[in-house]
Image (cartoon, rainbow, N blue to C red; front, side):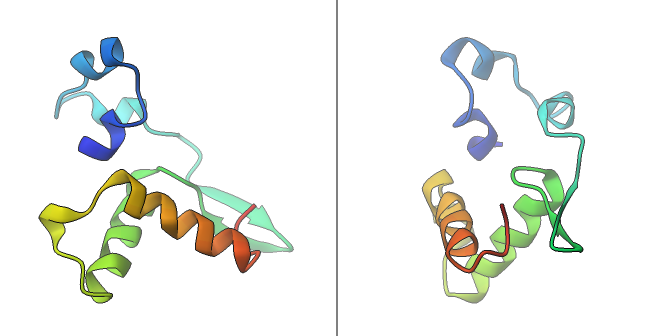
Length: 83
C-alpha cells in the first residue's frame, strides 16, 4: 500500500486503508499493443508481478520502493513492451 500512497496527495493518502485500496487502483487490467496484451501499470496484478521481478533480481521485500517499481516501467518502455 505504500507504493499506492506514493501516487496520491497527502489528503488522499489518509483515506487509504486495507479495506478500500482496491477501489483506488485502475480497473482496466490489460492494454493492447501490436496485437499483444500487457498488464496495465499500477494494477494489483502489475504490482505483484513487478515485485516478484525485483525479488528475483535480489531486492529485499521491505526495501522495495515506488521508484524501484517505476524503474520497471522505464525498462519496459525502452524495450517497447508497454506504451
